[in-house]
Image (cartoon, rainbow, N blue to C red; front, side, top):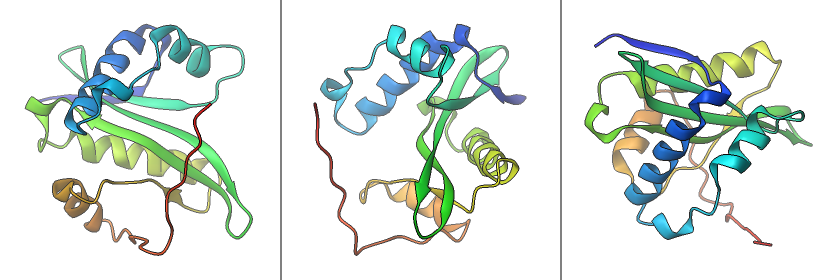
Length: 149
């Protein structure tokens, strides 16, 4: 399997949304996806992009996605935040996820970030095992909070 990792372009948005929906299904929350292709196109590829992305391609078809953005820590400075990492279920375990993950790490280093942050569901043991291979630290003190508008 020849996997190519590249920065996403606007034409990738339909495939990207398809992967987002596949991830939501995997995470048992498909009804929670309210984002649209139009919003993703504007927010990632418009005049003032607020996220970046890499895609994994096999035989010219987008099969994986990593979406990131920058955040600021008053303690650590500029950080890169990995919002989502998803590979088509039929291709998981073949290296595309590793390549996408490492592309975001490299991007963070190139942009002068002091580290990378992300979340993982506590029941997603395969993802936890994957992240442990990188020496990831899992924080059990902080509680995730959100406020929807």
